[in-house]
Amino acid sequence: MHKHRYVPLCLCLSLLCGLLAPAYPLEAATTAPFPDMARSWFGYQDNVTYLKAKGAIGGYPDGLFHPKQTVNRAEFLKLVFSSKTDSEPVTDDCFADVPASAWFAPFVCAAKRRGIVSGYKVGSRQFFKPDQPIVFAEAIKMAVLAYGNTVSEPQGEQWYTPYVQKIDDEKILGSWSYNPADPITRERAADLIARYVKHDNERALANLSPGCGKDERSPSLTLSVRGMDRSYILTKARGASSNTPSPLIVAFHGKTNSNEQVQDYYGLDRAASKYFIAYPAGIPTGNGSFSWSDGNDKPQELRDIAFFDAIVREISDSECIDLNRIYVVGHSLGAWFANSVACARGGVVRASATVGGSAITSNCTGPTAAMIINNPKDALSPQSSAVAMRDVRIKENTCSAQSLSVDPSAFSCVQYASCTQNPVVFCPHTIDYERSVYYPHVWPPGTADAMVKFFEGV
Image (cartoon, rainbow, N blue to C red; front, side, top):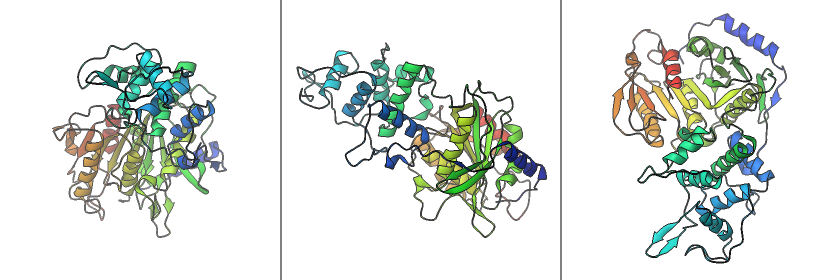
């Protein structure tokens, strides 16, 4: 909320970018394959559409997909076989709880014959547990083995490590993007299988955006999102090319600062010169402030999450973006929204870094690394809110309560243990450098450098 000096050069650059890009609003793509996927991440929408076209997946009799519903073991095996090959006839019961007449028997029995599943031994009998929700680790193992891979499985709690490593090494699905013990939803199950099919059939790398390898075009800086024209400023990555994927930062402004002003005082254009950086414009409220949501929005469905999705889609369609390196940044209300986006797009946003802001949601959709910077004296963003946000991330990222001091030491940062892939860094800084009406709710010197260093380390 603190107002910093305004440099006219930012406005000039934004106007120049506007001349280089189409002046008319570009309609944000509406490609939801089922009505109830309209608010899903566009990558999940695209991959469900892909499998639907192959006849490998469908909806329910009500015409919906139920994307957030968890998948059981039988359903996932059907998805694996439907996307890869025809099922085989069944003549005998292959597990004690899989009669030959069951709809899922052809898939389960074929998987048993091929060594994809072995079931659970209870006494002298083998059970498959078809109705048991499947977790990411189990789903990944089934997918890896179904596609002909040979894996030496270790004993113990970390039995899934080589399967996870396999799809990570082949850039099918980053191991940072999920917790192995979490149940997998229908949209994420479809996403996993579609990634495998594309990799197997087309040697496609899931982290490369559609703009990679294509003739470059300037992204439109004005998008029509749900019937409303929205705009953003874009700083292009230094040395960007259609053959080399670049990371992307989406940086949100606060309640009383515009995107042009935060482009000035955030300092990201200098610190993150090798990144594409998008600065979205919030909607003016009419009283000199801006908003990122409507009053009755649900925590996971804030109005401008769709704007974030549209920006990422437009830039990744136009430029070569590393989809495993999408970051969000924000200050004050912008921090609140960046944290909310990271939670609603868990497993998609690689990391968030924020100053002076919490979030209204605690039910995240997956892990995301987080740097949370907050001055304990900040009355506009109480320390209790920052601590609550930290605890949400510690839980979602499966960190322990133990912590160790880390750089930047000037920000009094600590990092929590046991979650090295998705670290949580908490910085209750006490930097006293500027007395103003908004002190200490300010953007401390060195913040951009600290954030970029954090992004580079995850």
